[in-house]
Image (cartoon, rainbow, N blue to C red):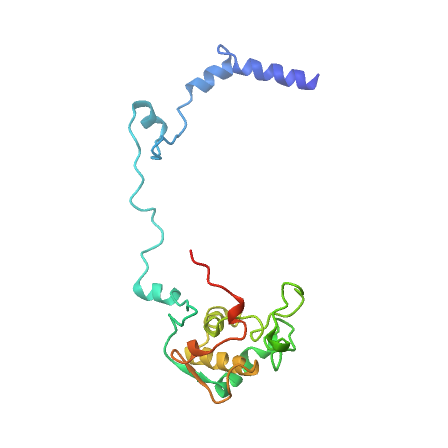
Length: 209
């Protein structure tokens, strides 16, 4: 009964001669958007005039060259985009102890967060068969330049981007040394870092798009 009453009320409201229908007809036409995408208001729609988009909406600004440069910091696997500066294992050890050890442990294996250090026996790559294996820098990362890029953009998590280029080069050297990839005396910079060959480099393929 309740559903039937509601349907009857709806039919009455939509009858051409009903008060509701007359009130609806008296309302101005709703805003619409023609096929070309240009918005029109109700009055303009009546006579075919189109309402143009404003030149601007009054917020934001054109970025300056400095603002663009601050975001344009990605580093490619071949080293394209690496900045000037440099660092050593010793300098990176000091930065690691002060900035990274609280999350990754004193030697990169204790946690509580991601394990950074460790190699698989024979540099095996068992991750598809055993996803519980930790994906460390020494066992999983294919490019040393990616390590620099990630640290520079995302670490430490509470103040990403706070480290200087020299500090990031030092951290990269230290972590690569802990993973037995580079010698203790290495000096990393934009020329030497792309020359570092990672154990897992042949486990990945470049996807041509």
